[in-house]
Length: 98
Image 1 (cartoon, rainbow, N blue to C red):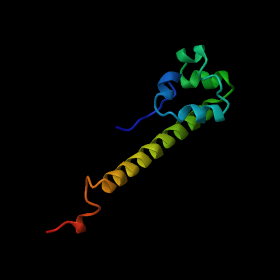
Image 2 (cartoon, rainbow, N blue to C red):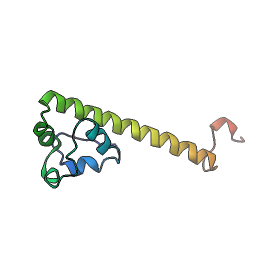
Image 3 (tube, rainbow, N blue to C red):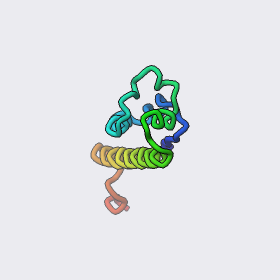
């Protein structure tokens, strides 16, 4: 199931989506994500406190969701390669004996 971030999600919910989300937010100046007050703030509220505009918030939400999609695709690709290497599934259908 695809993960999705919304601007109304609380900061802890946003951080649960991926271990890398914290780094992305901190790189954008959101250093308060571990602050006790952030636990009760939505992503939009926290960003507004840090001077981000409504447009900036929408851009950030889109970028975070793009990241989650790429992360999911990467994991799926690597999982498939690992299964093939382990012999759990054939490398391709043409290699099976008919």
